[in-house]
Each structure stands twice: as structure tokens, then as C-alpha cells.
Image 1: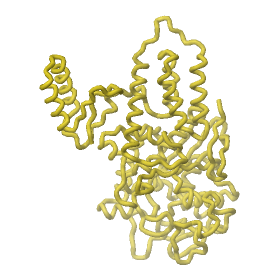
Image 2 (image 1 turned 120 degrees about the vertical axis):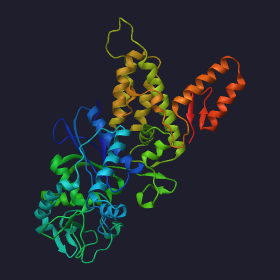
Image 3 (image 1 turned 60 degrees about the horizontal axis):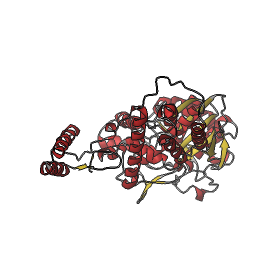
Image 4 (image 1 turned 60 degrees about the vertical axis):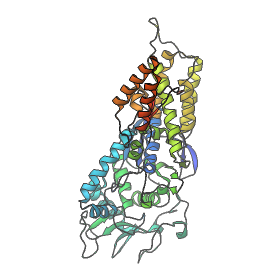
Length: 479
């Protein structure tokens, strides 16, 4: 097998993956703040992290993958200004912060399942508050100072702060807001005191007063509690590379007493953008996975759309692009259906792998080993799917092994399972099938007037009758 090469954001170089614990791969991915629905840009990060985990498993490593749930501490800015996102949404909806967290965590986990993302561990930040307080106490004397608003980390006390973001000056940390009394612009809150006269739904007693942990502290504490120090790989969106992850690294350095960042490799996926720019909840309206489903797209069409771009490249979302990915997924499903329905000969005995099949597998393995080059891996996958010189029963297992890495679940699919009824549809699938069967009989009887009338009625109900479609699809619902 090829060596697994991964791009380390800390060194800005491709590096050979060498596990800290032989035979194991321990991965931590920054999870969602569960104050709202996740948009499809958020979900790109988890398709990427899932692909990484699948590749590590494919390469033979025992995978431990953690995605934390932020249910406290994240402010409306990524620095130390604004309201807590959980408290703000709870007030807006007239619910408890705990109820808000439970509802949006469940929705997030449902989206993971619809994208066929392998279920990782999902610890909540509120489960680790006491551990966070202990961590803060252990670094307070050498690395922190107290202000009226809370306990702050002095970034000048660790070596080479901000090297992940390549931001060595205050000007480089463009999203950090001013807080009165901070020694340095980049200093950040370890513990935020509840202001005098206010009561929060989520607050705890601490040596620095009643309050809540800073957002950055949770990931340092949870990753090392669950994966050890150091662990193998830390992932997140590219926006975390600028503030959140440098702050994690600073905390890790302070706690360990050495310059180790806490993870062997730091990996970041790029943004999903639309024509208005980066997708963001703060911009107001945003696209959810459910939005795509409501318009008739299978969620795995979005997974395929993500894999068509390298994780370090920006990915532009468009409905036309999603439709093209959906057609590509349909072709894959159709090709697999033909392969899976072909029975091997009675005297078939598995033999040594043929050279053509071996070449396909080698090319696929080389692609995913090259910093998760999924665009190239998809080409290898489709090449084997449509390879006519290899008999179907000889390549089925190889296709399923590739599919396990790409995560499409081909073995559980059929063409009918790809049909998603848009919200706007006014007709049920069973009624469509019945109408098409009646139309087929009318055409066979050369009753073209009746055939046309059935077609026109279906069109009026949003159904496109796809006579002569090269993919062999009979119909689709318009949106």
C-alpha cells in the first residue's frame, strides 16, 4: 500500500501519517454549536472528516473519532464579545438552553446519518465543565490573569503563538474584538464571569466566580481527556485555523509544559461558497440539508458534490452543480444494479486478482492516500464500475471496498430509493407509477390521445415524464 500523505496546516506541508500509537488512529473534529440548524457548509466539514476516518480504516488503522458538541461557551463572535449563542437562542424561542441543545444536536445527528457519516463519539461540553475548571486552575499561575469579566490567557507566555494561522501580529488576528484590560489583543477568555446582576441558564461556580468556560477551552480538555496527549489528527473548518485552533494550541502548550500543539497533524477543509460568498448562519437565510431534500435531491447527491472537490479547495454550491452530482450518482446506482443482479457461473471459484482489476485498485488506493484526493478516487471508482473487460462477479467485492471509502452505500440502494418527493409535490409516487402504467397500456393500444392526456395531467402536477431518457429514468418530480 502507498504511504498515507496528509497536509498539515501547522507546517503547510504534506506529511506521511505516522500514528502515535501503532495500529491506531485517534481523530478529533471540532463539532457544531447546537444553537441552530447546521447549514450545508457546516456539513461539508463532517463529510471531509468522515472521509478521513474511512481512509484511515481502509488503510488498516483502528479508528477512534470524536466530534464534540458545543452546548455552552461559544459567543456570537469568535473572540470574547457578544452574547452566548445558546443563551441568546433560548431567550428568542422561550425555551431552556438545555432544550435548545438537545433539539439541535438531534437534528445534527440526523443529518450525519442522512449523509452516511459514520457515527463518532459525541461528548457535550457541559459534561466536562469540572475538568475545564481543573485545567484552568493548573495553568492559571503561569499563563493567566484575571479581569472583572473573567480569567484570560496571556498569549505571550507560550512560544510562537498563532503559528497555525501564520498571524504573528495583532493585525493578523483580524476577528478579535477589543476587551478592556487585556494585556494583548490576542489574549482570550478561559473563564467568563456572569456579569453582576445577571443570571445565566448555564453557569457554574469556579475560583474566579460564577460563570461559564470560554469556548476554546472545551476542545483542549475534551480531546485530551478522550484521546490522550498528544493524539494523531485534529480537523476543522478553515475558519478555525485563524483563532480557535491557535488558542487550543496555546492552552495545550501551557498545560503540557512543552511546545507540542497537542495533535500530530492539523487538517482544515475549505469553505462552501455560493455566489453571495461564504455560507454563514450570521448572514440570515442559509441552506440546510433538509432544503435540498425538500427540493427532491437525495442527501448523498450532496455528499458526492463535496467529494468532487478536494477538501482544501473552495467548493461553489449551485443547484445546477447539485443536479449534475445527482445524475452522476444515478449512473453509479444503475451500474451497480446491473453488476449486483449478475449471478456468477456455478463453477466460479475466486482466483488471484487479474492485472486490470489490480491496477484499478492500486490507482484508487494511491488517490485516497494522496491527501484524500477524492476527485481522482471517484474517477477510479467509476472506471471500475463501467469497466467491461472485467466480469461483474469478479469486480463486485472491489467496488464495495471502494464504496466503503467513498460512503455511498451502493449495496443498499435502488433507483426508487433515490426518488425524493419535493415538498411542493401534489401527487404521491404510487399514483405516478399507476398513471405511467396506464399510459403505457394506452400507447400499446395506439390510443395516443389518452396517452397524451395522462402525460399532460402529470405535467400539471409537477411530474416530468422522461420518455427516451438515456439513463432509463421514467419520470422525475420538478421543483
